[in-house]
Length: 193
Image (cartoon, rainbow, N blue to C red):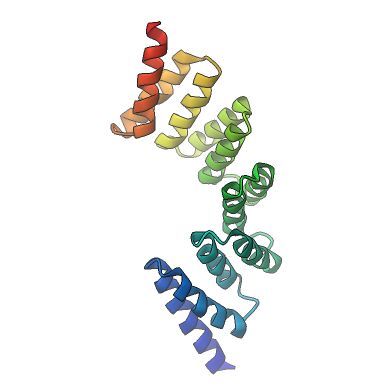
């Protein structure tokens, strides 16, 4: 048993190293070996799913994230990656559901709030998206992306003054934030007419 554990750890560490080097196909071979030794290790399934996602093999990625969640339903990172895959597949309601699960597990995760806002923005639920960006900003006030996306949703609702404030705040944090710079120019042109 000890030898199997050692082999499993070696396969897993080698796979993670290959993953860091963006050698996804090779990493998958090592994750497969590790998962054969210990099919109950949620981290192996999670990392294997990440490989598949990087290779745009989304159905396989979902299967791996589901296996990880079968092992540990409170594995917040797996819910987030599953949401990301659904977003890649343009299955927005599925993605939204996964971000909500992730937030049930960790309501103080600013990234989950931000990404839930992105999904709501795609669903054209701009007021709800703004609420999510506000939650993300309560947790991390220096999130220039959340400020920019909030500003964009305010712009879509014709709240130009508030949108400008968001873009200016984002640019104070990151003076070269590309999205905030572009949106500021667009709003300025809109207001000139």
